[in-house]
Picture 1 (cartoon, one colour):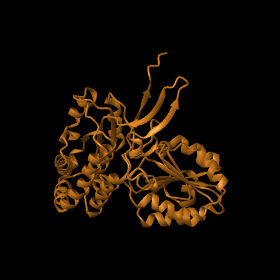
Picture 2 (cartoon, rainbow, N blue to C red; picture 1 turned 30 degrees about the vertical axis):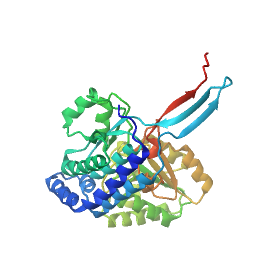
Picture 3 (cartoon, rainbow, N blue to C red; picture 1 turned 120 degrees about the vertical axis):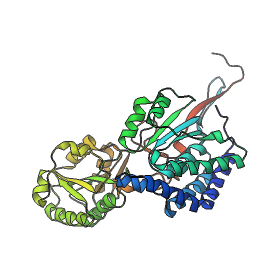
Picture 4 (cartoon, helix red, strand yellow; picture 1 turned 180 degrees about the horizontal axis):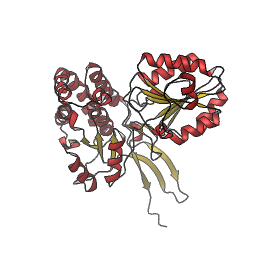
Length: 398
């Protein structure tokens, strides 16, 4: 087990990492271009996540700078109790130890998720996807440089260049201690990790998010929110996949027609339930199973519901437990909806695209957890800790 690095050392490494990313910007982009040209897949979302451009480098640098300036999440007192017998009992946050991050295609995870785990006092094991190997190895070499320049062992950040079989073997029988695993990627990656891991796994990243247009909705806001949620970035877990419209919305058919026209400008494939497709002459869904799907593509399903209760029941049955938004001017209706919907993030009159650690003021995120233990929604620095009890006595016995 690595002894905890002082907060000064951790911050120095993060600050140095920000400088190195700036220095090596051109190199990193050209190495990433090799990954891009080696990628022969036809997955648009994957390709978008693989690219490292100036905007991505800027975001990586900013995340390092923000992390370096944040409070130490380790050693924060959470509870204090003095026993009748004089024992002083304190509970404080503590580092997990070693965190393994398994991810696909996103070189920025090598920086940002690695940085969050490192700042929270952990040793990092990175297992990236083969499609981003060259970019990842370049970034890991910068981590190693930042560590060595601060007289810290390179072992604090380790890249596991494993194929699927080697990864499975490591998960089932780790050759070193691993305290927590965070898979970042699609459902197959998450299922694979959960199936084979022998230590706790934080499940992250499945979306299938819903927007519900209540009968008292501001329809311009509804339109803007749907277009934003569906079209700005199809490859992310906070994108929008499903829309429910209250049948009591006055002239809902008019709104449906306008929505279709707007979505078609962005070449979004639109499917509807029976009532929506009758009203719009669009294809009807073949089965209700599609309500469970996360698309990660220019595709959306729209349905009609007869009450707020029906909307809540439908969302709770089919959504991924990530994000849901109600569009309504009635705050009481919104509050009830938000309390009843079983998602990590619930919204009134705003886009689900905000479910993100940076947007929520966490200064970045390691993952967005759709599990209920130990933390739900965006997992920032302050959540990537376990805890520990400190008991100070003077010879007390029980």
